[in-house]
Image (cartoon, rainbow, N blue to C red; front, side, top):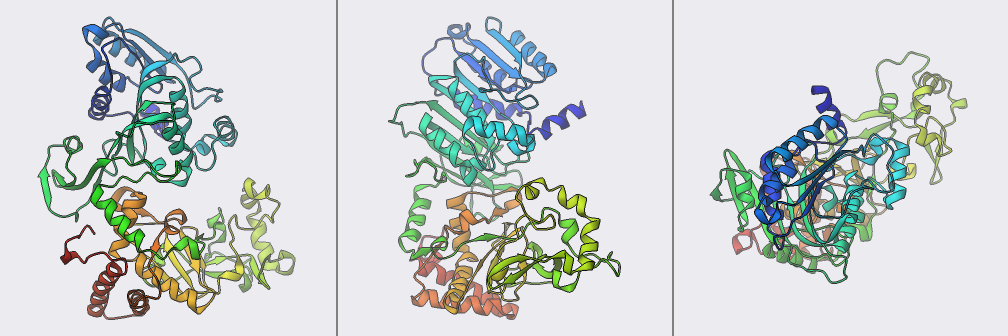
Length: 563
């Protein structure tokens, strides 16, 4: 059994806890109209917990002729699901069929034989299609017009919609990534075009069940017409041990989610920040789905009204270098006298662990970086001119040539997958980690290269360098932490956030010519240097107040203290 469970987890399949299943079913049932028998389906039913949860609520005299349909690839779990539904709800017509939507080639429709349903309830697998193998991933992408980092639940959502009757109710538990990521643009647009959105519930880092991703619930009524009903509500809950005054102590997270009041709640020893409000349709269908209360949105709008430019208007945010064979390129102590590459191959590299707010700290790693700058053009060092490097790389030739994607790109087999522009390393840079619990934006002037677990922006002149200090001051402030959470809503477990190009390029920056912006630059330069702790704390306090003033946000003692 342990092997079966492990295999299902590898495929992104996690069984839904009974309490969560009951919660989803209760939320869905309130949107059903009439008392007629229904066709209800779960296309990834596992042991039938979701079907049981909704059947229990619909087992009434008027609906005893309902039709319950379950699909799964595991026959043992199908048998359990069949026994559960058949024994609990006599009179329901049932159909349970084995369909393997992961291990076997994907057909034009994942549910080719699925009859049109009135209700679909599901917790489809969370797994990147790339993990299914290149051939199957390409097949899925081609069939459904998908691109980028696509999760398997994307085509599940498309097919479930196809086999849902107009006016039917869909309720699904998925990863919350599609709400805010660039790769989720396609599915956000699709859902907006095909549904009246009824509820979006971001379950955040509440750990309601054993999944590697943060879950969210989507409940919608199928509506293919142009005119959409805008009655939808959002619910959002995350752990937050410093969110403010606790307004209520609840027995469970589900009790919090039943509340119509936003604020800080406590369950046991854990505190949670909870928001509830009306879901606002984005102006552009592919935009991130922001879930803010009116007060929060007014605060965001104030910042945007006092924005001079966004980071992406002035700078391109770049990812660091990626070799896809780090064990080969990182410097080690195991070189022999004849196979340690010549010094010209080695460069200092800044990684996540070197980045503090404002500055770079600690000893930098050295890496083999087989490139040089030729009048602004990236060139690859020729191994024929460097016998020691040639000897070293020959020992790793099989491993490096195993990077098929690089070999297909018509490049030298000992190159990086993402080398970046060599001529840019010499410039001052603003560097930050891709994932961090707190903002860590640091200025570097050493000329070191940047690891692929970080992002960076370079300045080519003094004016741009001052803008980098301004961006660092804004990005490291309390205000921007709150803005990031409200506008990008991309927290991971343990309070960590994603700091990636699509978000940082949308950071708002005030007019750099104001007295407040000039003060922020001055403070950021001081914080970049080594200052005593007592002075450091005072500078941070002044910085946060100055950033507030730059965006015309009243100071915390002035009434609006949401950050």
